[in-house]
Length: 330
Image 1 (tube, one colour):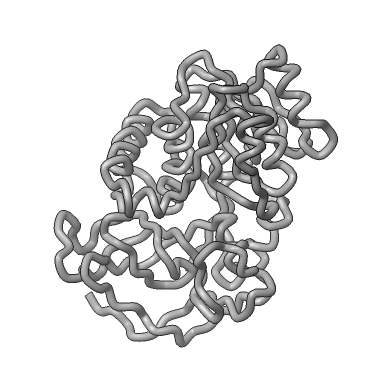
Image 2 (spheres, one colour):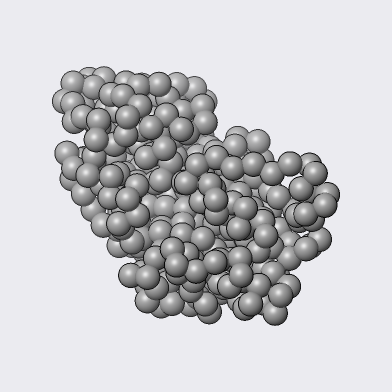
């Protein structure tokens, strides 16, 4: 199989936002190192982390200029030294850096096969969205049937995954979304949907739970919402899994945890989970494939943009003007 030396890619040129993404046609095709594979990208997934990187607010993110994107599905066209269990020509989805391009290098440990009968675009989100949501709900969030879970940004790709899985596991779901997205979230099975723009989320959660609070909160927003999430969690036994900061940084002090917010706060980053707890990641993927077999995780139909329109796609996501998963076609 012939692999070119240059490719088309989206390059982020500044830290000023997605408007400074530029389509270039002379990016070097990367070479897989030890433990890595090279994927010919069919579709790249778009995530809120991509918008944070364009503004330099993603922790330890790349310095501009860089090839953007964190997630892609496609065909393995080259194997790095020491890679086993993967073959040339296999269709996979993986997470790494440089996904908004025609070719992408991915750690072999961070790829999983595209299920038989699924299109490459339909499996986008399995690692970043679905695996993150499942990790937040189960091994970290310890969700049990009959408990109540609060899910923020429920109309997004990760939020939709969390709602569907939480209902599958027998939870009562309280979701937040802007008014125009409420029907989408209800159709996923959410029991209650809160208009976070016009209502006090904490007060609504306490009202819906008889003053007790949510057993589990999936916190992906940050900013002022972070404090509301802590206050909405059940005292002493409530868990808040933190995996996003879309609205900015927020903090809690040891004094607050002792005297005001007696709850469990758990941090989650899927890349760190893959690297530091590969056994947990393996269990997550086994469970996700079981959810596919059970019809809980069904093929997604993302909104697809051409690679040249990547700047607009990220701007739409940042403005919260989108619903569900977004993708780029190289």
